[in-house]
Length: 577
Image (cartoon, rainbow, N blue to C red; front, side, top):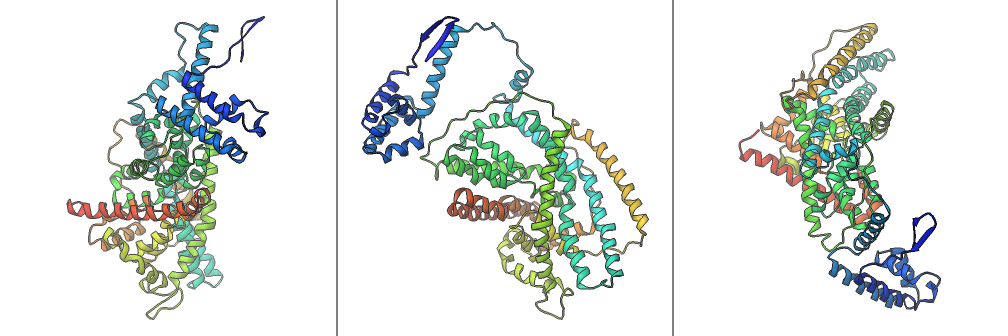
């Protein structure tokens, strides 16, 4: 290596490692010199690459004549260095190289005695602090979900009012003009498409608020700090901070989070991270939390939603510790190197782009997977199995959907939600978690008993939509200052319950024997912990194989059942609910 000290003066400074490393390199170089096919490479360079675990080179050596003997020498030297330095060999070599570079820079560079700290450095001293880092991260996540639950609430109510009111009335009116009023076509449009897809689209404002808050954190540069802060905690799981990045992606959607594990160099880290990612609450679960929290925890909806996200992180941590000492006990950890970007002021264009792209993906899913599932659910609800009903005109408890759901309902009875309605919603939820909401909208929407509203004209509907939109925007703007107020745990204003919310509440109360709050909490926990969706399962299979896919699916279902059981039965023993 040639290093310039002065403009016209050069000196050769070969990189020399410490004696144990140099001895290992020498022995391995001698063994490599016996392989003719590698003669055009530097034996020293080959030895260093093999010591640093170059898999491609190791395969070439193994395929060459005499390669097995070389790999035997390699294994001996790696074991010796691991024992001597009590660390991974690649980390040992990297550390000694950096020390060598540091010694050179100390000789050739003159640095200011006290360099001025940049603004990023000043902020990082606080947000990446050894003890304050994690509390700051949790506090920011708390603000994110307060924004998600509270700021979006007025717009959520507005969208719900438009879909369940004017939009439904217009569809019914058009079908009546076409002579299809009161037929199965009207049932398909209202009880199938609008109740199913519309029930999910109601939560678009919630997702926009979530993606807005996450975009602020990402564009500002904080998310890289979050990975750095979480490195110490992730080490306890047998991982490192880089594995936390796919988990952060998982808060948006678990599918790209599974694919994001490709950025991890170690196969062991990829599999372990892939097993933990599904416990990060994706945006598809959020509508379920929001709906049930609004029904059963109206004064503390934000707390209830945040607790689900926090529980997912805690479960991932506990499972990571278990996996570290069982399935992945003998595996070697990879080093974690992360460059922290400077803090930047987020731009409106960047924030809007992220919000739009992610929400548009959700809406596209609503018109594909959720629509198809809603139509299947409607068809099963419309098919009579017993009694005097006929197609699209039968009692719900005598429909094919109720019959099929009733078969699996006993599995969930000990958890407090053993009715066919909630069991059926969980079964369809395997397709996509948004479908839990659409299924509930279809089932309980048919059961709700609303008083007939006074008929309105088209112009009155349009005027009402515009007026209520302005009012919702005003309420949203007024709620923003409250989010950053001093008392973040103050009781939230309870929203006026709809007939659908009342029907869902009555259903949980009946199935749980009067303990609807505990049953709803157990239901939320089950939604959090069982398989996110069939697309996530397919991504797991593609990335890690059939075995790990089934380990993930079966393990998540078993864990969800056990934890939900503990929540419901434990709550009963403690006299809660």
